[in-house]
Amino acid sequence: MHKYFLIIATLVFTLAIQTHANEKDIIRISVVSLKNFGDSKANDKARLKFIADRIAEQAIKGVCVVDELQDSDGLAMKKLNEAISKSAHVDISMALSERVGGSKKEQFGFFWNKNILDIVGTVKTIYFEEIERDPGTATFKAKAGFDFTLCAFHTRPEGKPLKDELAFLDDLFMYIQALDNKENDILFVGDFNAPPSAKEITKQDVGISEMIGPFSSNIYFIIQDKPTNVRQNKIFDNIFFNRNQTNEYISDGQHVIRIDQMVNEYTGAINAQDAVGWFLKNVMDHCPIYANFRADIDTD
Image 1 (cartoon, helix red, strand yellow):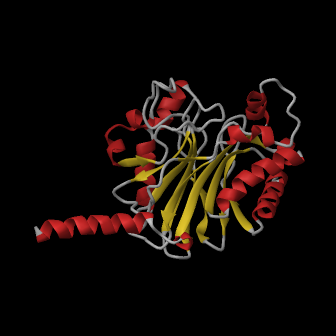
Image 2 (image 1 turned 90 degrees about the vertical axis):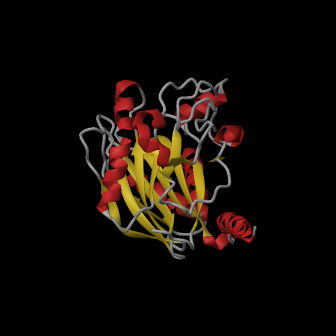
């Protein structure tokens, strides 16, 4: 009886450690999937401010990964970073991957609060024939101790190219894991254009788990069944990791920032009957997502 009591007490204590941390011991890892961010949006005050505000409110609490940054000369990125820091009222650092992709080249951006995190080394772009928009990776270490590597990803949107890229994710995961045998906290972040598994409710017939096969049994998806697009009818964005390696995650729900509910507050010129439709075409078409982790624990 005493033995079982100790086991139960240990489990309860472990759960308490994970879910009842001081705010200073929690960091946020987030994803903001934009829609073709470049000079036109950077030069539009209303759109720039809205986008910068969404990134700032995430990055100030940790690190925010942003995709679909389409800026060939760097001017739009400079304006975006300045606007994010202004919104956050603190200096938000920025690092970018190489520009990748087909005719519309894009890059991944990492924005973080340097009072909470440090980047370890530089952002690296890993090139594969199997992937059109080659992923960007960056390693961060929290001041309190937790270190981790983020792999930013943006799949092709549909059909065989989507399936092929999703099917390659397990190989990519293991490749990144093997780059540093001392770093086991590998988190994939971004727009995967697919839910964790095929969902009848969202009418998405391609799921990540089905495409990566048995490897998925070890994977934990932050977003399980909450839509992440502005229309609120598809699951595209996610953060996932190997549950056997990353124990710092705080299981406190699926966090999706419902920007579809902010459309009426937008200060730009919405002159369409379908305001949400106008918004997703001209400002953002995905909702930011995030997950919380213990900054003061590192179980590598």
